[in-house]
Image (tube, rainbow, N blue to C red; front, side):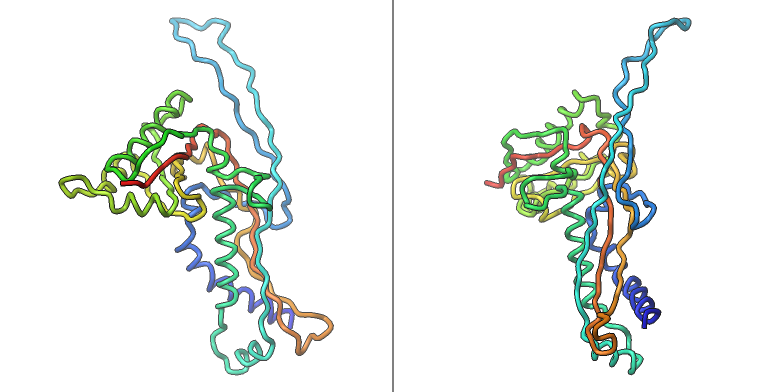
Length: 292
């Protein structure tokens, strides 16, 4: 039975991973760094502190040396999981008939894990929904463009993005050298999606051009009136990444009290942690309105 359940679990993995890749938004926002496995409970990582300006001269001299200063951070790696059960007779019937294993229960659990991962990456880790033990991209953003901006008017969202760029410029972020993703709460995204100027031209193409090659996403993880500007994974991996110690995995087991007739217990789980090395490359747009 143990070997059969292991093979059953691996067949679940092959069925849940493709649809998860289609719907997963959070991993499109950050570079994913593979870890060392489920047994890894924490990770040490370093943040290089800002150096002084370089010198310009016609020969080398003293006085332009910095002691390399690292901020050593140890992050606990949280687990995301969802449990479920499968009726034993249904499981045995599927095996007896040689039919394809029904992955609906595992897939539903995987969707819940995916949703929790998106919350963890975008917002952070919070067990009470208010206080964050670990910051995600939005809660950990070093830039807050909080000027009231009406995205219901054509050009409003572009004004907010440029406003965030200006704040980043002051923080020495190379805004013109990076590509940017803009993730918006549903009410903001939907309003921007239908925005047109007096001539009927849609605002989305102009907004995409402003992002320098990045993309636009909608996420219900963000509260109404909020948006997040973050570098794309290919241009911003030196600033932020997601350390994935355990990829989404399924396991199945049985109750020893009723090994032949009891239900089969399933679990979908993963483990990972977001690492922000320079929070000034993350900008939250925290005061957006949708009035026309």
